Image (cartoon, rainbow, N blue to C red; front, side, top):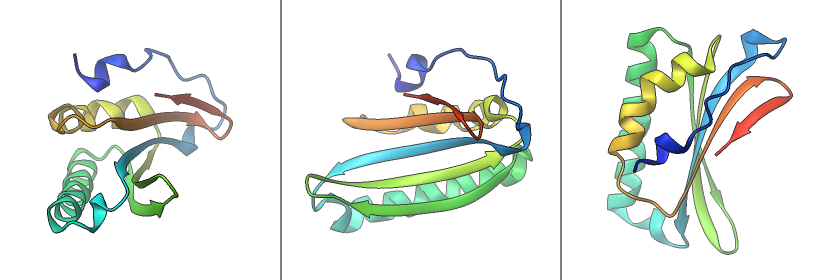
Length: 118
């Protein structure tokens, strides 16, 4: 079973369709992102998301950010557009190809106040 098979099949009913987004958060054990191999993989994934979003014209890739916490580190990728479902459809094959990670969250934001969290 793939992580992406667990997403809810929920249709958008928000009133701010121009603010839809798909936000992907990958969590890592402390110190993992300081390893060159892991860091290179993050930058490769950044390039892949940027290329897919640009070539499919589903929205705008807004980059990624790193976050360090007491018990974990994470990297979050942001993709915005008019249809979160179309964005997700385009990036789903990439998400399915990722190695198994303990903690992955995917948010399909349909409006400013309506989120579906995985």
